[in-house]
Amino acid sequence: MKTGLLLAHLLLAVVFVVAGAAKLFDRQGSRKAIIDFGLPSALAAPLGLLLPVAGFRVGERDRRWWGQALAYAKQGKGKKAE
Image (cartoon, rainbow, N blue to C red; front, side, top):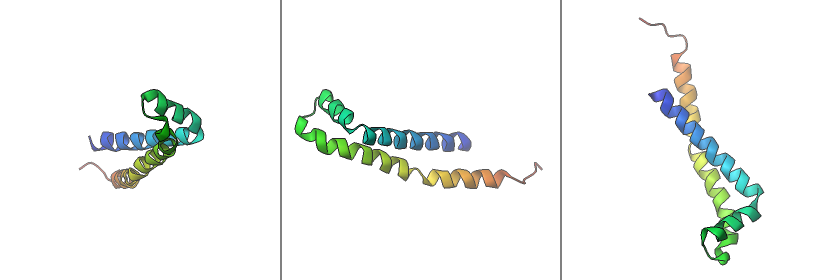
């Protein structure tokens, strides 16, 4: 259960970082998507910049799970079943 939860958090962090990078590299597409979503075009430019930043922040927030996953993996090494 703990391993599955760690893997899910790691996967989610990777998804947010990749999504943030994609939005950052295609800012025009992000702005168009914001307008197509129904938000005013005046908000398209600021939100086009804030969305990738938010994606990176969420992915970065979950980076502590990397450390926990490594500690969990290391904990299991060298132990024998008793």
